[in-house]
Image 1 (cartoon, rainbow, N blue to C red):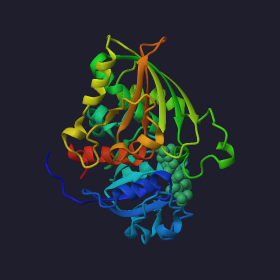
Image 2: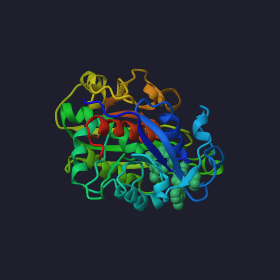
Image 3: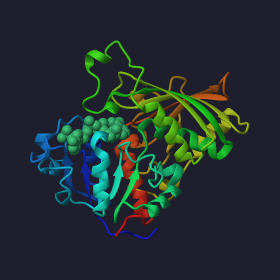
Length: 345
Ligand code: NAP
């Protein structure tokens, strides 16, 4: 790997939201990236970050960021940074991200708007680093757009990719139990979620079904998804049944997850977990409160592997939705793009 020039100036769009706050926290002291600007809506613009944000993470807000003035996300010249990490609401993300790319920025987005654009790589760094070459086909201007997949898709792909590589993957049925933070700071109310769950998340099932095919580069694989919102703060749990092309035993599947590594591990990227998939033997694992923070929230925890009487195997996966599923995954994808020399300019 050739050494890029560090630090690289970066900005966060949508910096005040649930995912934006994770970016602020993860970028504090990052060895490669230097946060130089924060942006959000016109409601927040002009205030200091400390005034604009309703900070909701357990760690303190980085002091340096608290005093930064929030810019309006469409005020592009005043939002400096070669890499623009976007945690914008998808109602506004599409055109703003395109405008940043036209201005020569490398946009790494968590919003859904550009994910299924055939020119845009939808990256889970351990699974499809080779898709970064799509960046070369883009015509958004001097800049580029790279997309981070849906937060549940990332956990599903990390669970399936090792199995697909070793045994071939045909189809899966997945039922999710998704955390409240996945709905953003304006998500469901306490009244709606107490003594209750909501068996509907708009657009989520289609995202899991379609994004998985794009990432695994397999138009023939079939995923059927059912998505539920539950009263967990962070961490999406997925109950997965899977049919494989070739026979495998339970110890072989578990070993495959335990040995799985990708380019981020080979390149020793700063945000790469040592073990992207961790199988836990306890009969009642994984659980959100106990296992969502494994490897800094960047590992997918797996457990409860057993035979399925409909497909071949069933098991449970758990992935942190705002860390691996959003800000952490996006930062890791940016590190991969930098390491593989895809950063324009
Ligand atoms: P959120 O908490 O609602 O935050 C939304 C952010 O967008 C805020 O910073 C908000 O700024 C900004 N914003 C809203 N309207 C705007 C406008 N008109 N112009 C500019 N900025 C505007 O949402 P979130 O959960 O962080 O999600 C952010 C994005 O990541 C969404 O596209 C979401 O689908 C995606 N995502 C979320 C998760 C997750 O687990 N939460 C996971 C993966 C992907 P103000 O504070 O100024 O209103």
